[in-house]
Image (cartoon, rainbow over all chains, first blue to last red; front, side, top):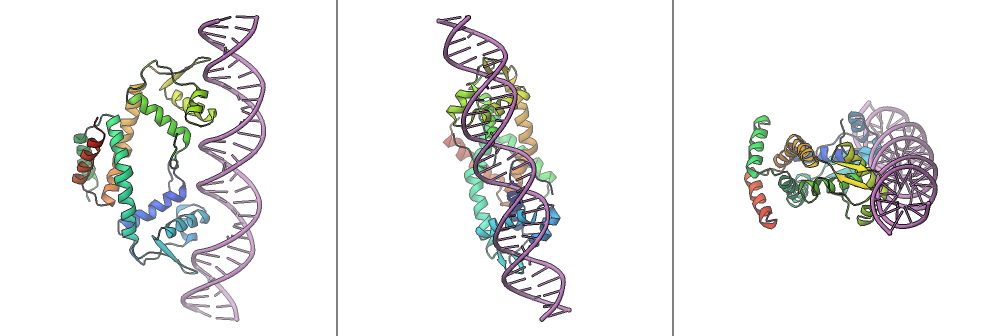
Length: 123
Length: 123
DNA sequence: TTTAGTGTATTAGTAAGATAGAACACTAAA
DNA sequence: TTTAGTGTTCTATCTTACTAATACACTAAA
């Protein structure tokens, strides 16, 4: 797996998992790859994966059955959607708009970029 | 100064300086606060400030007169605008749109958020 | 020339993220 | 009971960002 920028790897793994849940690829009750398995898959140390799992477990997104593995929690989707939406509205969007202003990019141009994006990612 | 998240402090300082230039608060030829001065102002180590300055000097945004100080470079505004606009179109916007999709936020809602933002930051 | 304010360079230390390897405990299934 | 696959814990090491303190070199002005 490719890790980018200044974000710690364990948080990038958290994002990866969150995205799989938000996109409904992984659903409630589903078992995640084991700590060791995932570590091999994405080429990081098992301890780093464990840190990501612990982080998500503390936020009730996944839970653990000792000796068996980690599973997507009951309300994982709702919890994540709530966390991420709040973050989007309170932090991401304002920061994004601020950058737009700084670069003198108009909302009309943003709408144009969005249309282009949608054409490329027909979803 | 408040530093946030996982972004290294020296890069947050770089952003701070870049924003002052992009917003035309600091103009071509203007002298920046000295390494020691700025370090005290924003409460970081002088070496950390120096790292930010060196970073920007390498990108031709500021330049240095030994024994005198650092100054905003001739084409700093254009250089920054170019760098940041490219980054916005190639990276920020696509990532932002991707998050929107993941959270099922429509472009109409984004436009609504933008209107709200503009009301609060009458610029 | 002297002085104060610049940048520059060096060395050392701290803290967090990440790696590495090993040992241990629990669970399910053979 | 045994075994393989889980999670868990621990200790040690490495790297990077950052801090800290100091010394040195350059410049402008008194």
